[in-house]
Image (cartoon, rainbow, N blue to C red; front, side, top):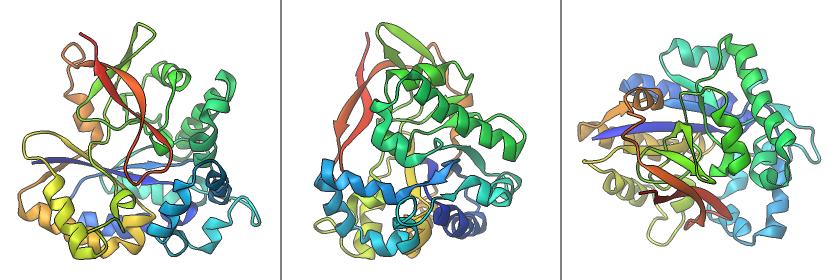
Length: 301
């Protein structure tokens, strides 16, 4: 069983508290992973406006007990309280990730701006979000980033075309079932897409039958496939916070089954561009997630 563990870091607290907890666990278990960090300000408090656009957001907040998961400071960041830097607040944590052998990529710049307003941005605004994220990475690490993961699994044709010109090894912007190349307006993009293939814990926790740690552990141990690549996204704020013990139990269960953990860059390096399926990128909704996400669409024959 092969698992690519993808750790999304959306907030100041997630990087400062969640990432060190996760890296300690993963290192002790000898597990490799890829971390994607939002490189700009933590404006999490502004996400409250989602409640007016999507009633499902309130349901998710209650179901996941977001107040305890994120903390009051994070939930007010960028509104009553000023936003806090994410990557630039903890540059040593980012460098330590690489020194410890983990992979590091860019999870956008302003996570809330991208997730909530991507379609409102013109080409210049979208380019600025991408360029700012890549530049912060370069300033902290000293080398260019090789991977990008769109906040909230939301992308569009403008963003994909801009990213395709950046010479990245891959991006991981969508939900799907296998690596592929994106086709837009009859054009096939060069950069391979490695989609998330499993539901995230914040999508399933608290759902019917999944309201206890034991139930969540059983659920996830049944989700991983023996025959195909599993790309599993966790969050520093969730699995690195209130669900840490549950995640640790899942990890131990997967190791007991002989799972091999790989980084996304390893997956990208062995992909054959001529053999990858070419698929459209569509918009869909997922159980437990408020609003739309980008997903792997029909394969072009």
